[in-house]
Length: 287
Image 1 (cartoon, one colour):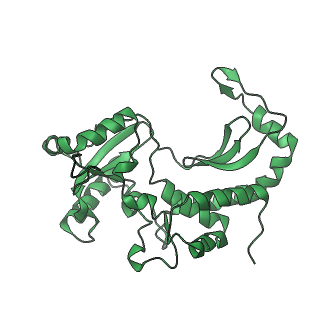
Image 2 (cartoon, one colour):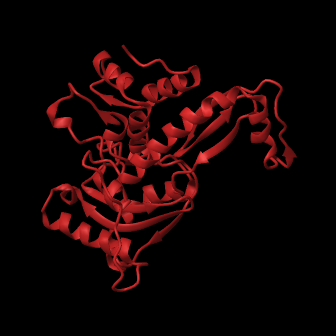
Image 3 (spheres, helix red, strand yellow):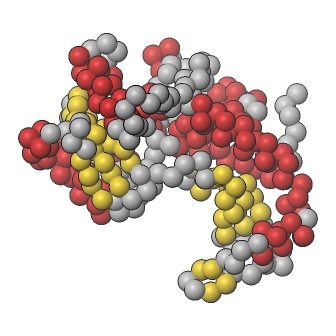
C-alpha cells in the first residue's frame, strides 16, 4: 500500500512527478516515482533541475587556463549566437542536450541505452555546464555542431572554461582526458599549493553527495514543519521575523495564507500563493 502523505506534502510530490521528464514516459514509470520516498523524488528533481539555467543577463568571461586567446578567436563565429543570448538574458535551453527535457530521470523499464543519461557527470563532478553551439542555417535550424562549450554558470557570470567536441564524453579518449585536466585545474585554482581538497564527492548511484544530503535535509524539514504551517502563530513569525518588501512597500500577512512547499529554482522553502512570497529554508547553492 502506498504511503499516505499530508495534503501539502502530497502536492509537492505530485508537482515534482508532473515536472520531471521521465523515461519511459508511461504509467509504470509514474508508479515508480510515486513509490519513492520524498527525499528520493527531491534528489532526482534537483539532479535534473540543476541542468537548467534560469534566463537572466550574465557577464561573459573566459578562463585563460582552459581557453587561449587564439582558440577563442577561432571559435567566436560559432559561439556568437549563444554568447549574445547569455548577455541578453535569453533562454539557453535550446543549447543544452536534448536529454535534459526527455530524460530527467531514467527508471526501470527504460531502454537499456538510456541508462545513465539522466546524470550529467561533468556537471556533477566538475560543476560545468556544456552547451551545443553552431551557426544557424536553413539546413541546421537549431545551430547544432560537434563543438561544445563548457562553462561555469553562476548567478551573474558565464565563465567559459573549455571549448571541446563530443569526444570529451568518450571515456579515456584524448579529448576526455584533456577536459578532465582543465576541469581539475579550474577547481584547484583557488586552493593554496600543497593543500589537499575533495572536489564534488559523488555517491555510488551517480548523484552528488551535496544533492543527496540536501534532499535528506529537505525531507526532514518537511516532516518537522508541515504541521506548523496550520499554526497562525508560526505563520505570524514567518511574516514578522523580518520586514518583507515589494516595490518599496511592506507585505503584510494575509488573513488566510495559502502555504505550500515549493522549489524556487534550486532553493527550497515555503511559498504563500496568496502573496507570492517565498520563504527560503535551504538555498542549496548560489548559481
